[in-house]
Length: 517
Ligand code: XMP
Image (cartoon, rainbow, N blue to C red):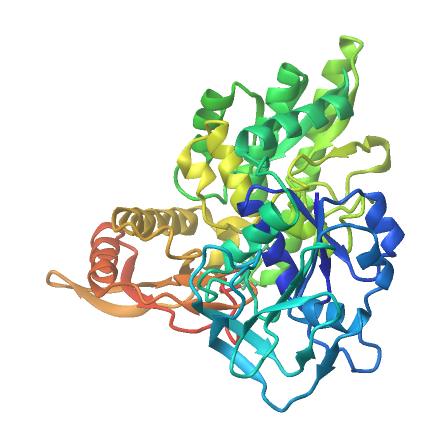
């Protein structure tokens, strides 16, 4: 394991991902973790991340010197670099030459572990106010920029390394290579975190946890629950039963993807509950978005509970027990809920929160250690259909929050038809990987006048909301090619009679959210 010590900026997760891209397993720990505890995890290497603070700021996180005396190869980045310099007797100053953004860097030492084999001049991404002006004793300065005479240093004796720039961002031309130089050469890590190993390791852990008991898993149609279920299926076979609550709010073809394609590719035992009618009844007359979410969450848990009870009872007749519930929690959820240290942190998710006392399961979370891109790779490795593996994010409440107004069967059909056209054309144009997601929204209570053939129409608008994003926290509207937009518009207005207008949402987030409700 490589430990990435988080100093509170947004960079720690990115660093951890880059380490894994170098096929070395990494985990994030808070900077408040005592050094003894870090060392107890026997890390192969430690990386100190960037952070927002100045090392001189009051209450700035310090690095315990003991960290550098433990003999563990360590790499300081940005704030971590300065903290390392300061802790070991170097000088960090506010020189007045802050650097932000792309900056040319010169490698100044003919022999360097970090830069060996890389060009002497390279572009790096900087973001610092303070600078290291003197490296600590024992260190060699190996690179400089105009504003940072000490832009990188190393002590190969003690295997301590540091850079002022951010090697983890793509704007640093050779950033990944510098990071890999540290991992492979500086720290002697081996690239063993491969897909085959990830899958085998996950299966092994699942078997150890579940033993000879039984488990259930709720499928949503999304990639996380599908991959989690497929892994558990590999591990315990038919002792896993999956439940798919079809709330009737999915898009065209998605229920079939779960019921047919997922089952065919995994051999999973699946219990399908068709609850579409029940959700429609519960949503009758409701227009408030939050109210819709509450109702759907409530109904979902009730239906899931009934199904779970049936599965538990059925197992009971064979003298077997269902003790485990599989959930697709990802590593970022674990980190963000302050976990990652082994404590059970549960993503609050409508399909588990709220199960009654007498129906409590122990959680199995086989994706707890994985980032989303790794989950997709595992899905591919397990042979899941690409429509599931590469599915864009889709909200749990489904199309109900993409109909502005009351949800009815007819409106769902209209929206489904329009959405299917938009998705088809985006896929045909090869744009799926470029956009984060593209909600298609029906303004069910809005009507406008149109003309079709000789006749006047009075139909509804459909909104296209294509966005680009890194994490859904912020987003920008996608600049889709006009021809693609034109095709979508023409087809929707021709093929969906209730719709006579297609409009494009050109709002970023903030101020708009990605969904309309
Ligand atoms: P917003 O609309 O808040 O969406 O910008 C951010 C991301 O979250 C998804 N989303 C949801 N997902 N239940 C979910 O499981 C919800 O109630 C929900 N609302 C929004 C949305 O699709 C986007 O990816």
